[in-house]
Length: 488
Image 1 (cartoon, rainbow, N blue to C red):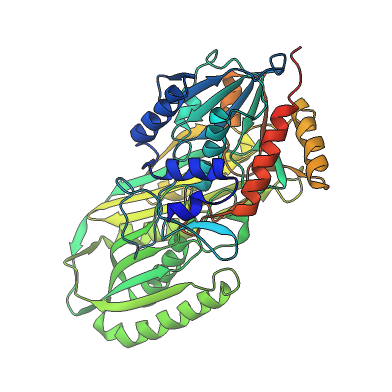
Image 2 (image 1 turned 30 degrees about the horizontal axis):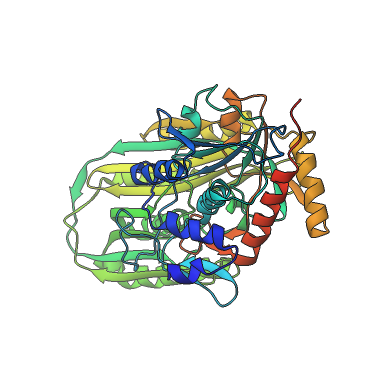
């Protein structure tokens, strides 16, 4: 189906996006896409190099007449979130993304994430580098790695590597927004071991499945009231334990920290004498939960099927502790910003719960634009999990990006947007993590801004890119490059 995508306009961007999506590029495993990008730059006879952590930098001289303009850094990240539906057979490590065009004007992938985040930004930069008829100042293209699972590429970029004065980050997801700030984040990991016990006699075993949730980006979508499969599953298990002495053999829910979990599976047992009562109570609670979420999660499915009895279950004391901790652990919006309307200030995503064969592992991602609020929520989560005997580590911390409403490049974008599209853009800060805050630590004088095409459902198999919006974004980017201020 990539042929169908390549035929879209602007063809120079969609062609490059299709080329990129043919290369497997999961976070932490970017060797192939790094080599792809190095080859791309060198084949254009442009100065191209890889830094010590794997970021790729490509330099292109200014076009005639633009030599006196400030150097612009065009920046996007090479990695993508790999998520797929449970019933989709797909190997992200070997297969290119299977794209198609919808009748209502979007590009999607069949059962997997699309990689428009941030592949469309990468593709646009590639198109600029390859172009022969687009006016632009001197350009440094910065392709970072591992944005999605730690931002280690941005963190590893040393000061002095870049010479640019202005950075255009092409990694936001609403085409009428210009981003001037973002949240920082910290990874929270709770682990512990536990003793397994022989499964009691005279029990019935069930596989419980929570699926059909929308998922989405744990920063950009956290305020939308989507269901979290791990929290819903824990609610079901907690109720079954409180009322019927349910015992847990296994839980496997969610995936990446930055994706709201869509699915969870658990294997449990209940004493046979409670079989009918448990089934009735479970179905009643499932109906209640689906009714609660009927507006935001119309496809939510909660089922329990009888299966073969597992040989082992969790120690009952540990089970009670971890289910209570998961109930107490905050998920979703924690605080809204008092300074910027409709901006989430602080949130948490309980992204992954895996309990199996004597090991517990819970992964969270806490975000905030206010450092003290981030630490406050992180400490609350740490306390909840430590009370049930878990070891809790905080890692992968990255700073937020403080808004600068007086930015010179913001004024250029604001004016150009109004000239082109006859309306004012939304100047915003976002709750997602952008690399600008990290890059700004080593390049504090660089004037930074972020914008991009409209992308919906990022970090989920429902990810889709709006075709008309990509055309709008491409026009905007080319016109901005013509208006870059002259050097001081």
